[in-house]
Image 1 (cartoon, one colour):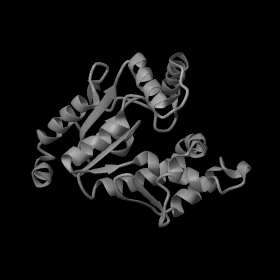
Image 2 (cartoon, one colour):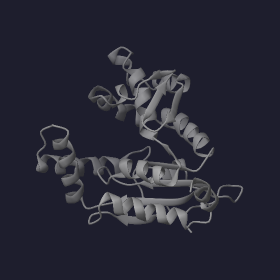
Image 3 (cartoon, one colour):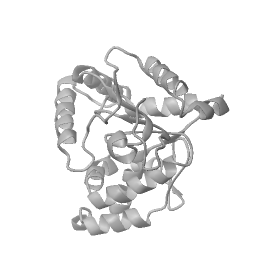
Image 4 (tube, one colour):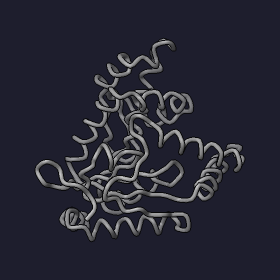
Length: 239
């Protein structure tokens, strides 16, 4: 059985999906949660909310740990339904996906104090109901006691092709060689991070999606969850 019990000896009804950039974690997590009737917790959206608020600061203050931690501590972040993100009661679902926020979010996500605050909230939310989360350190840091931990992987070439296709489909110019080089550099940085480094969690099942389409990956994950005793009651209720 994947997962590691908490101090009370219980595994959490959480599907934790980790893996490198471009492996399809986000779309797979959302679709798997939908298929199971589980809650999908978009952890990346939470960091983006803090980054959005940080952009209101003078530029020289945007990397100040104390300022970022104040924002994270005060921000009221709500995820009331799939795709909707509220920040202090305001719908910021579109605003947090802007290129400007994307350029700032790495600073926020690398701050130890911000991570500690948001990880605490993520744990609180994930314990309320069966939940699917994805990221770099979900199974290693956020929910090491998740009932099912998955490391979603694919070859760099496959991930670069998918990312190039996504960019072109969105009407953006994308060169495969440049995308691949950027992806490999991102892999290097993610594995070397002092906070939230990319690792394969103890007990995680490794799923290589290089030759699998997204429908197949979602079906396989959903079947794993339905077969797991920790999720059994929740799956029956959802059906």
